[in-house]
Image 1: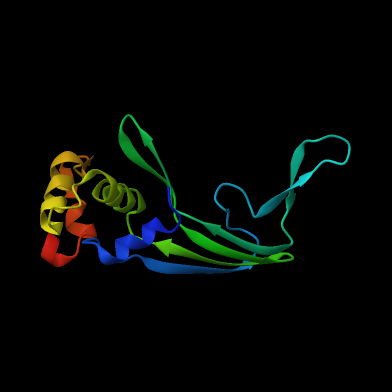
Image 2: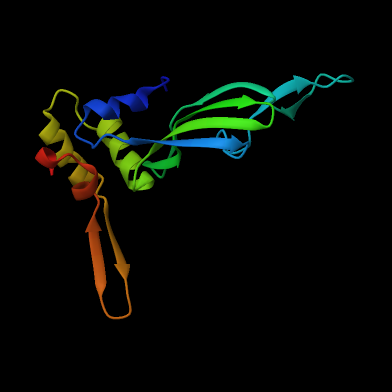
Length: 154
């Protein structure tokens, strides 16, 4: 997996992601844990984690495949730590799971020689993103492609 591949989404049929900011005491994980670094133990050859006091972390889009489907794990982010303070910039989408899993299918499982509209049609057919939620009296079905794609590709 190449680094910063997720930036290709900005030039795809998917709506561009927004950016979120955090500035305050260290609170944003990179990705699962708070910013930390690994150091050697003094007495053996093992490693242990210590809190990062100063430095940058660049976290790429986190994903995996499970049962041959893409699974979103975490959003890309950049974190800067200075003693007990952190500034973090992260991608922001209204529907992270649906957005990134659909884009991963578009990027890795569609024919790059086909047109964008044909690739989106392939996504809709082979990686549908339609979810239903049931209320007390009704069923609401949402096709997230209608929400995450640019207008001309819906």
